[in-house]
Length: 268
Image 1 (cartoon, rainbow, N blue to C red):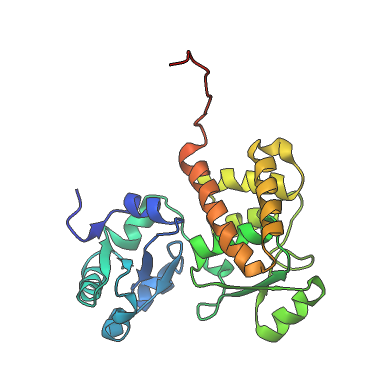
Image 2: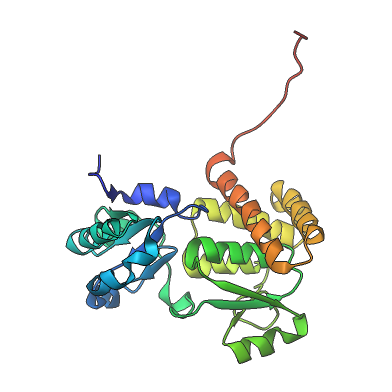
């Protein structure tokens, strides 16, 4: 049983990817980050040295602080955050315990710039262009910004606004062979957990008209097309789509082997 204000790697892993996941702050010193530049999903870097300057931003929020071994830096930073009004915990065993448990770590060479996560794709999204933003917001950068523009302008907007283009031909983040863009992101970010692999199969089936890949693919496509008819504003559709993918993720993680069969019984 961990001490109060301590969270175990297994407990934190269950919260990452959910809409109410805590903010995760990596306060490892530069030497430790240089030795292993990978980081926990959805985490951001912060310095314990100036915690007094930024702690107030997390007032009222759930926060998990990660240092190398879960000792002085994370526990001291978490204590300061609690002083500032946050609900802060330190990760038991720190980065080393998370890595030793074989839990997902984001690959640094695939990540967007730390100071700006801006993405651009085609307007009127259906499947991949909602699934990919959901993956990025939940597992890579909770503050990521997405621009939806005319298909002919994606490349030019990416160049002028220093945005990352995705799900268009000829760019890094796009379909590869039979894999859709969501598949590519799950693999390259280093997020290939059983739940996300299961969800990726459903997304691929819905996005590429391969409903034979998973029985849920047809349902995901139907829901996605319905959302596209409900919203004229792509960002409003994205907000609604995030909830849809939250539900599919919880199914893929916790309920994929559950069945439901209503049986007609005698009248009462």
